[in-house]
Image (cartoon, rainbow, N blue to C red; front, side, top):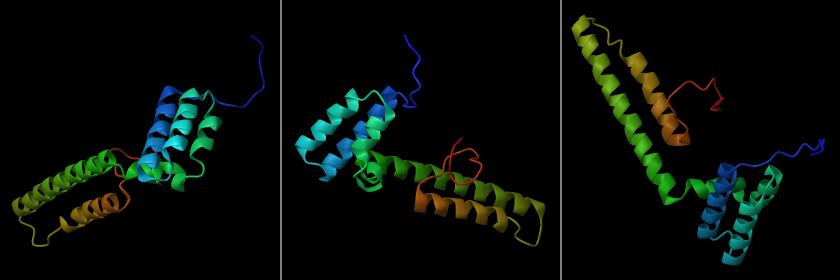
Length: 142
């Protein structure tokens, strides 16, 4: 097989499936009619290169990711994640308050770590990006 100097990257099954989910969500939202949705879905599954997939969602708001984020499954997952995060916050606040009581300190020092936990929870509610683990800033996972 000859070596080519092309810079096109092959796409994976997972990438094709992700674009297919975006197209299904955009069709369900009414941004694509059924015929166009089916055509784009067939093109997504037939795509061999990543640039062929990006063309399919280019004209959708946010690349179609906004429609995907509003699906019932995504909203249910966000509620579950917020519930887990709130549970962690309450448990941590309880433990810190218990340590404060046991320490006999007059100043309520747990206010500082609890404030940071609340800020993280508010960020999670607002942006929906909280994940366990440190991300080296800017919300991007490496």
